[in-house]
Image 1 (cartoon, rainbow, N blue to C red):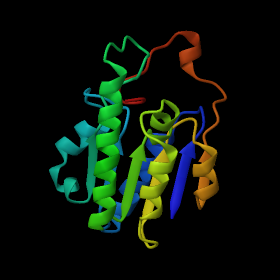
Image 2: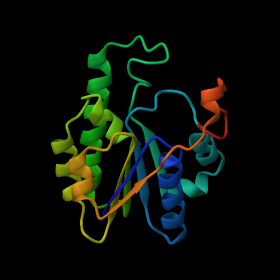
Image 3: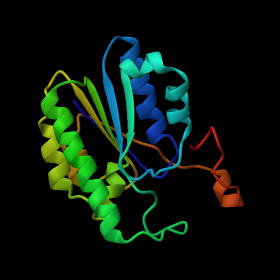
Image 4: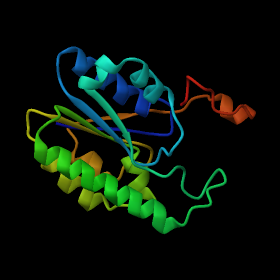
Length: 175
């Protein structure tokens, strides 16, 4: 099954993590590969570090180098592109290994919109996932090809967000 979480509203990564937790509770092995999120330590990483027993079934791997072309990003575009392509290669390996029941490609939709990886290459990986397993493609700007290929698509729609009043991202809520 291919699932797409997209839209400008908050909750795409959070929904993906919720699916991972639910699957792990049923004894399933899960992997999230993060395409954009960089070297900072977010809440999900701290949580897993504090609960090593959960790491048997829940794996979250940062593959990105951080935000691309925003929020003071000074890295060359080629560095971001190489990191995204390496993360997609890791996704291919995860699919081939059949080790995971649920694979999340977090922010892959954004990586495609930024031209760090191509939609065709991502779909090729997604379509190799065995039918009894699930892959989630998350992030804003999901390509139409992802939406057409998906079995389930959810759009998170922003109605109101504190960011628009000048509030910065909150620890424990947004990262």
